[in-house]
Image 1 (tube, rainbow, N blue to C red):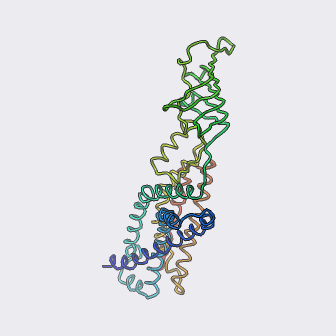
Image 2: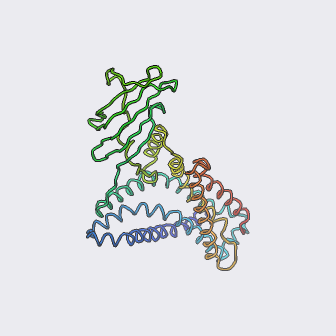
Image 3: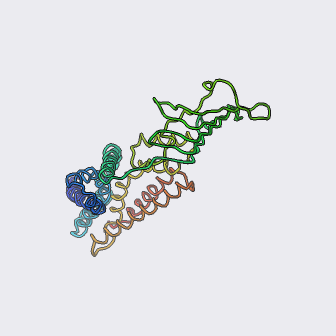
Length: 355
């Protein structure tokens, strides 16, 4: 009976909050870009299409806030009407009474993970692509002074310039080592063009060690491996882990590891894809523990305490993610440490909650 009662209090506020907060977030995005839309003469229906694609992302921003507000409002309202006093007097603890909210928020957290991966990421990508097209924005993927590793670290590429439009490499210098980490050969080439899913190398010369000297070989060039990496390896890195799904993020991080590029920041963002959805559970847990701390202005103060705690979580996560990106702590701890800390704090708050 009590389970159904608390959920009937919670869900109407939660659903209304999602609608309100999502609407506000979409309006903010619209106002940020409204001048650009007007100056570029973007049709109204196209603008609405952009904002419709942004709606799932707006909902992802709104869900944690909605759970926090709905939990704080529901419990504070019960405290203000002294209904919880009667419930506690009957021998039911605060934890047992709010257990349906905790279970619901945990289910929402798990659902949030799939919602973000299967809906938010693809719609946000389409939104940004459409917005860039409407506003005539272009992304330059050309790259210069590139140094990457391949073949398990035994091969090193240095490329002076990569032209993404032509899929052409200029000024190629390749150093190949053998299994014993000794120099095997060096390739110097003028350029390479990506044709039919492979590189066509021009002006290549191969040098090998002859005693103590480095000499150009006269052997058939086809006996030597030149460039096995695809053009996506050489173009300027514009991939954001936040804008790709979990599978694509994992593939990209494995690529960074394979070619010897830094990946701490990307790996911490990858772990954050799993840790961040539990914010929904944490804000509900925090709201329960912080509700009813005062007898006056219960709703206002409970909401203020909960919001302060949530802001503290976001600040801590921002700091730990920055430290993880700089290699000060592990990427796993960068993403999960704030979740662990605030989960412990939630338990402490609940144990000292007014009952």
